[in-house]
Length: 324
Image (cartoon, rainbow, N blue to C red):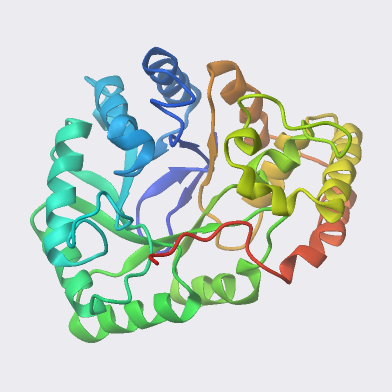
């Protein structure tokens, strides 16, 4: 496994990270624990979760899986998206973040989080309030690093400027939808991150399964698949998307690997990308994707991937989570 610095920080994360939003839902407790242990055994140290994944079950399962092994993992969690219908059960106010951090720590059975991320920009809370609250968490030893998620480039740059002006801890990373089928971050997020020393953590690196080759125009979505459970993704499973999927499959055959492995490897090579988080509902699925970290395709294959996906730099992101 290869490791990269997370932005300009001294923290090193595995180039392939484990996304855990299916833990406690599409993957049951025992399967999830087996996946975590398999990930740690393979050299993956970056585990990404959130306070809302599977109704908090993801954090709880991670806490159980890491008993006696907490030191082996870089645990990242998030807060900010709605946790309930109450007036203060959402957003990135000091009130909400402090409450959610304490609850996450209890579920994770730990006294610190390695990377605490704001799940999305909160237009109703001053950034100064959010950043001071996060800085206090770092100074208290409950959080080691802070990151953003689903921020627009201007929102991220404004936050970094405020942190610099006030002498507060800066965001070291940003999570954003990024894949061969969604290169929109390259328009402004990537240049910003390269300039400011912020690491990119792509989510949906396989575009909800589009880049795995398991979907086709002729057949309906496999039962239990992400598209089956989240029909809103269907807007990307169109002619252009299926064409890209087919082309990636052809190049993967040339490279001697699966389409998923090739798509993940391409993303690992992109500027500013630190760790590519990919989900798994079985240890076998995780094992299959591990080859992406050691793959060495011919340069012509990588160049061709750039060419066939260039049109996906323009248009709408594959996913974007915002407070309504």
